[in-house]
Length: 171
Image 1 (spheres, rainbow, N blue to C red):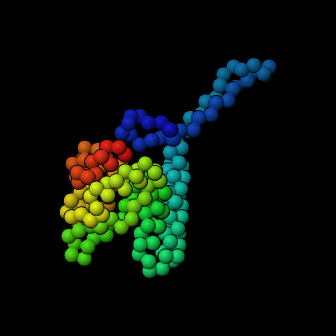
Image 2: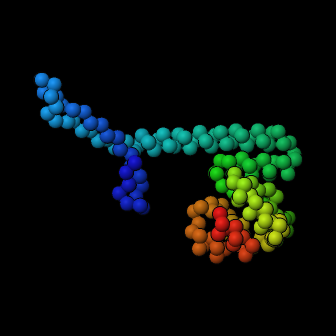
């Protein structure tokens, strides 16, 4: 993989070298071939992403089918699935019927340290909080999901409620 600079899209290059031999078998030069294979790699990556999505949807449909109408079991199983797929903390919060509160109904992280820190946060602040605060409030306000890793730490700290500050700093 070659990158011109940190902001540039990666380019995939294939390189091969073979010697050019004279009639006596001695090397008299080399043939060097450099080929940009970025389009092929992009197709491969796209195919891999598509297959991961299909597998996740397949696993999700099984979770729902096996859980029946048990909302608690569904939310816990989905939190585990999503955390495994993204490799990070997944929380599932439900909005109260009046739209004023959010309740964390399930969470999971593949890291036991992160799970413990999040459990500590929930123990300190409870599982319900106003729907107009924090990152969840931002999601509700904009209607757009937020992938925390795409949010600069200072911006995340600015919108996170105080109880989450230790979690953000340590994770």
